Length: 263
Length: 230
Image (tube, rainbow over all chains, first blue to last red; front, side, top):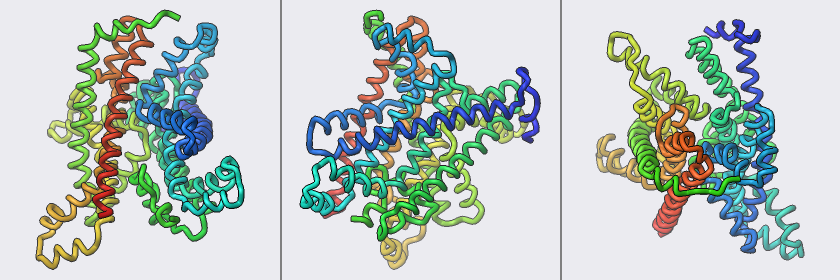
């Protein structure tokens, strides 16, 4: 059934090479996008929990804006609108970027910033789930608020939210497919291209589906491994392993089971 | 950089409005199909119906692991073939992108809603089932009048959050060249070259609608939390 993937394409490659190059773009986008999202997400998530309004209000605005605009619209904003609204010298420089990178960078920025807003909410839920005594103990030890967050609050909150971050990892690699609308030839785009070139639609989409399923499995196993490694001793595992991701996704905004156990 | 000119948006308002109506009706239809089908899928898994439950579990796992755009492509290709087989003559029946979008979103969301309801079903107190048995209620009556209302009530904030995500996801029908809110804006933008104004305006439209709805969900969540604490 997948034999057609090893046939020659018009440009002298095999169809499977198209698929692999698409997989490369998908992975690059998801991997680098994740670290942007994680970095910004933690900072914004902390900003959501501090009393100081100078931090709290921008953090709230950030989450509201990036979470409530569809990824596809954000993609268009970065790709079409952003170069037009910045000063024309910068805008022209952006338009000079050669093809694959001209869609890769807006897509990276878009996915990173969008996912960051979702991670920020998870981080906030994690911080709010910590017992109050942690903050009070840090105060009693005379730690500054920076040191309290840096060494006491954030490390514990991050250990609590690993199960709920699994659904964000799954989210970012799935959202990479939106980049095909601005012309990035990632996995889904390549599958469509193969289907159009060979008329073997079933094979082309089937191959892409199998690859996505493998990615999901890898992401899921990796996060389960991380969770086992960093789980706070004494806090119960969320639920049965197979339901962990589901339960945490269902409880978005609420507290995943681990957090209630840790209270 | 050219000066921004939003008068173009005012002129093309009726077209954008019809796009928005399409987005909303797609959301409503997908919500209705998704909830009904999702409840059935969740119950089939809950009752552990042999074979059926395994197939449903596989379906849900696959749908949740692949991107919605790929699902749209799959259904765009598969639905006419399946309909052809169902109608008996085996020839694919082209039904057009609009119906494909409705079917796809309904089936896609069913997977997500079924997960929410399935987890909700597990959260129902065991005593509720025992009380139903003590009252000699039939299985149908137990679920229809006792269990499902509670599940829906507990899960309602999550179901609504998922529906907001669904509303945002409807913008992806852009890949099928349909005229939803984003599709309308992009077609107009290509005609008159006013990309910046068009995309900014619909970004604000999505932002206002989703943000206002999430505020309602937050109020609902708070009210429910109070009721539960009592």
